[in-house]
Image (tube, rainbow, N blue to C red; front, top):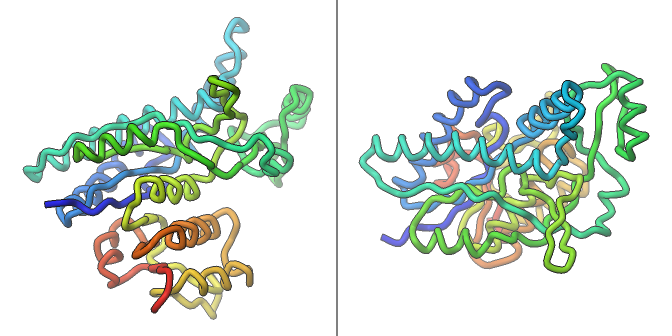
Length: 313
């Protein structure tokens, strides 16, 4: 049986703020992935790492205070570490769930580097909060180092740029593993943003929006489906109000209209809708689905969730 390629973007609800919590949550994600495999899909999985990269960055920062000979870890290394330990938990949970169902498919995690444009305007307008809350004095020290900070109601936080992904350097490895019918975990947290300097890939002080990387990954492997597993069953207009209206199947053109009219929040649903539109309009016979993890199969069958197609609702 030739399996259909699908990119599965796991949101933060698939993980947790602590190691024990993550171990519990990834079992739920593994169950969903195994359901997809039983339904004839070959998944490539990407995932959130916002909380985890913040934990790693904060831990390394505090460690450097205890022993001056150790420096603060750059964002690229924090991204790599978060990809590694999330992938470790996730691939083991998926492997176990598949074997418990009598299915043998290898699962591999690829530490993924993603090309970004050094002239991306995001570098001039950093927006992503990273790490723990700081005092005013600590924020001042960060600014003297050349880092950006932002003041919120409860304190100060470091912020970094969120450039768009251009290319995925390990894409040939992903394709080779898919050809060998292996499940792949790649592009975790949007991937490690890197700048190409001759033969050197230099880590950028940034994070990439994971939903955009999921779409780029789906385009590069020519997947049939891109599914975002998030905290809501369906996408809604007027979310959280008495006029809330859930969306079933919409065209990319309708989605673009809703984007222009400002229906979706920047930090939550907007990047998913934008990435979905980018994916379905870049090829033929593609669809993107947004739903909760426990409704993944029903969402793919059109029984729930929000489906975005090129045309012809």
